[in-house]
Length: 122
Image (cartoon, rainbow, N blue to C red):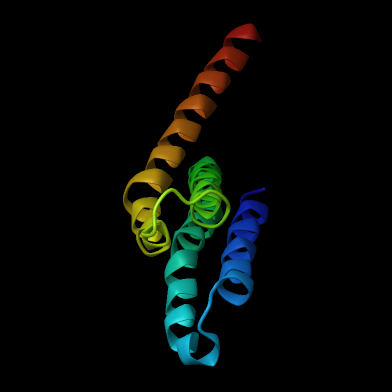
């Protein structure tokens, strides 16, 4: 499940880089860097999912994908200002520092709570 969420995030960023971005070949280096930067939170989530705490990776990937989808909507569907596209530059940082860790923590807490409920029923 985590890899599916990570793949969806990568596909979203590939779509943004190849179909939504302007500049053509003149912006190739910048778009490649932006693509790698944007996919970094998903790479970390996938690495987390390989460890003992799969739920951490799942939470981080789900939260990052939700945040990226929201950012995509605010930039390309319903921009409120001419600087909305700057969110594409800063969203990976937010995903790494705030969104991913918060999602991982929330999923872990939910997992613990559900595990506790399940064990008390038995």
